[in-house]
Length: 73
Image (tube, rainbow, N blue to C red; front, side, top):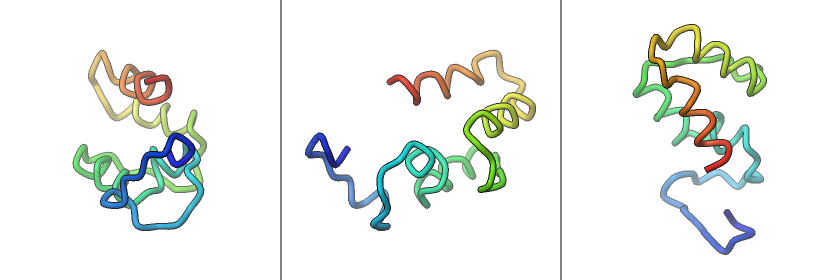
């Protein structure tokens, strides 16, 4: 986002490089979003492991669509 000249300081006040893991899972804002969905995960898991856990605990047919959209959207 920074490379595209975009800043969203109200979402994350941490000065951490904007990598996928941080943006989707480790940022306090992202953690709050996952918490609102009652989905908690170990910070040491990889993206694929988190996706697997999400699929296991989410009985929705479109559960993986959320990851696909966030990854390629």
